Length: 262
Image (cartoon, rainbow, N blue to C red; front, side, top):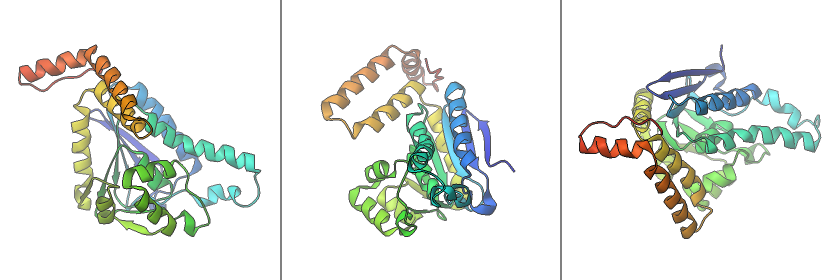
């Protein structure tokens, strides 16, 4: 069985974590496989949006502990462990820097790397059966993959402190209430709605979407003047693009624009 399924439809890359018998826990190889897929997607101009989900009843229940037990049993030096953790964190770096929007359709439990992948996405929607846990404190571990940076920015410092210090399970409705996800849907509607959202994004101007994603990710760490300077540069880039001309022309002609990302 392939650990990660990949298909494309209507300018959308659909990536499915595919180990349903073990709640889609990640093997070490899946990190590199995902990085390779993201590299392939970035080079493919026909792909505008990425959609992540899980097979079965889980998004992902974390990492396969049998494969990373060497990190905890004294078999590695601290420097070796540091290097391996850095390799795992490359997944977050790649997702955040990818110039195409990523939607996570969280179909079930998201724990550990599953929760980390979800919060590294640009948009998160969930089924009613979804749940999240940042349970490292219950295992004697610590957050990785940018959780300490991204989670407070998504749900606020107080809520982030609560869910990370308690390790409590967060239901889909709680996730919606705190802003961790933007929609909660019946399980049978999740992928249909996720694909509809992805199609809507794919119809937008790729240059504009790339710029929105880039500036949003920088905005928390910059002051107002710095953000407005980035807005100016982004607007100038759009003004110089063919897509702006197409967008205005399509609006005047009352038709759907056909963007080329140029």
